[in-house]
Length: 313
Ligand code: NAD
Ligand code: UDP
Image 1 (cartoon, rainbow, N blue to C red):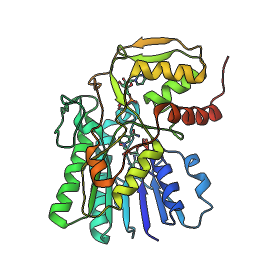
Image 2 (cartoon, protein in one colour; image 1 turned 90 degrees about the vertical axis):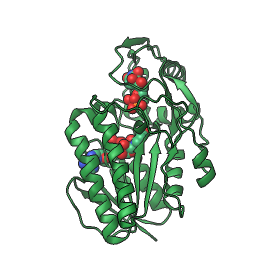
Image 3 (cartoon, rainbow, N blue to C red; image 1 turned 135 degrees about the vertical axis):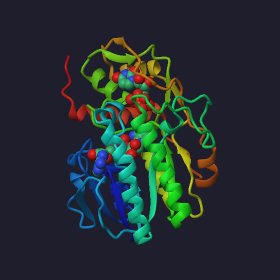
Image 4 (cartoon, protein in one colour; image 1 turned 90 degrees about the horizontal axis):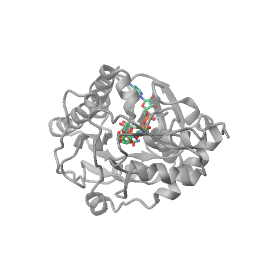
């Protein structure tokens, strides 16, 4: 049994991860400041005597004795990370420093939840780990993109300087149950809108693409990577099936039997035009690839959202 810290453990990915790690007979400490996470995501775990919950902001140091750290604390949706961009940078820089400091002190292995955003608006397609990216350092997405890039730098420097055992996972758009319906990301927005027969808000012309990974696949990838010896990454974790945002909207309308209409809103600044992971490294090193197709994953997510959203006619 390992003692494992999950920062951001009350969030979308963190809560699935806590659940899975407990199922695998680990002791789990979930740390969260509840900025975008919610106690309701992990409330069902509170009866488990191997689960602990700590309300703490990771930008402040904390002393804990653990074997592994998954550093997920950071708002992930553009409206949330842009709400207080200075805080987003602090979470990525000071938060990651504190997590790495803990890993160094207690000899824990640490997995950093990095992102496809380190590639910015990519000039290379699909994106491979050796691509250095095309990131605007002064735009509205920079607090997140550059924050995550510095977090990767810190991981590499703690590894080179202090032999900290790091793992850098570049996560591509992931969706599933327990996404916050008001979080502002595209899958949660479209499903909420479709279930309530509200207009579906497409930003730009809807021809921009994303590649959507179902949460269960992603969590398996993260745990496999954490426990893989002699491979620090960075490694892309995501589903290479690429869709336009308009295709996503029409699929969700069809799966929900919705009367919603598509409406078009301005494209936010620096919104990446195309995104698709090259996952050959994950396949080679981790023997991991996603198995859940978009339609199946969306159906599960829609079921979850139906439970929490009052359906209008
Ligand atoms: P989320 O917003 O649901 O979860 C983030 C969690 O971190 C929340 O519970 C939030 O309250 C907590 N948090 C934020 N700032 C904190 C702080 N200063 N101290 C303590 N806790 C804090 O987002 P998610 O989708 O679960 O993402 C989890 C991680 O994975 C993030 O680091 C995100 O950047 C990364 N990631 C996610 C995706 C994705 O598609 N879901 C893609 C790339 C990277
Ligand atoms: N998007 C959209 N309508 C929405 C929310 C998002 O068209 O209501 C678009 C957004 O402009 C982007 C894509 O969907 O092109 C994915 O957005 P999301 O915020 O989910 O993630 P990210 O841009 O960080 O990949």
